[in-house]
Amino acid sequence: MSTDSNNSNPLQSLEEWEEFVEGRYPEPAQGFTPERDAAAFRDYENTARSSVREFYRLNHRYQCVDFVRAKREEFLGLSRERMSIWEAMEFLNTLVDDSDPDTDLTQIEHLLQTAEAIRQDGHPRWFILTGLIHDLGKILCLWGEPQWAVVGDTFPVGCAFSDKIVFPEFFAENPDNAVPAYSTSDGIYEPGAGLDRVLLSWGHDEYMYHVCKDYLPEPALYMIRYHSFYAAHREGAYEHLMNGHDKEMFAWVRAFNPYDLYSKSPVRPDVAQLKPFYQSLIDEYFPAKLAW
Image (cartoon, rainbow, N blue to C red; front, side, top):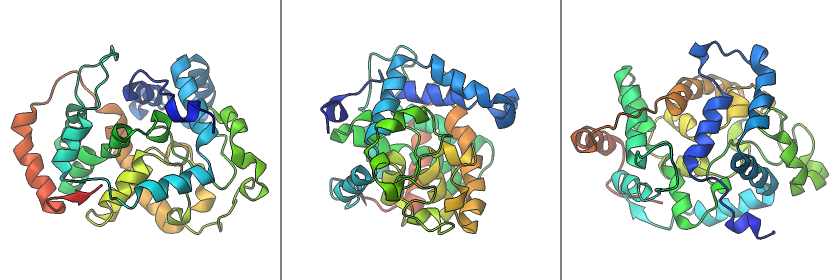
């Protein structure tokens, strides 16, 4: 691999990627329909900041089968740390970028905003907890992982890349294009076998799913694992790899998506006031320490 795969962090902050996603997928209440606004997706790509374009170029260049398998081997033994959920939140809170001009909210405050929006809408306790923890896998950045291997739209590797993925032209540089077995629609997978048998691009979603897969209800695990799989849950791609259960469970992923994208607010949550409620919620589902 060239050196840019190891050291390049083109975004000023991770929020820069999140802002791009919010713009590409407007809130449904604003009148968005995929059919009407399909051309607008390409316009968002054409007008994206150069840093966002470079981020996706790296992501699409290096997220290949060999890379994903190597990262799963490196991280899914969960042998780096033993931390509580709240300790992981405080650890993530050290991921602060003073160069970001658009927000001075901490990572914990962002997590609490998502959870509080879910709570205010009267959803179950496990749903609220999912909002609180869904992005904790971003601690991968604090272990030296480049941005493009932590955030970004997720997608299957080992089969043809869908043109529904943002900036699909950047996949031209991906080494999997030279592997005939990876170039068909189904690739190395049996059609309809289910997403659990599919290798997704590596990032915070897949990592966090494995951290908490033994502790949360299945709908919560789908939300965590697939919340960045926009090509599937927002554009309908890759249904041929899903089984019937996946398609049913993606209703939960779509229910979670608005809280993930649209719950940010300039109003700061009171962390000290909210902590007792959320600590009791964490204790209801998780042990005192988890393997990370």
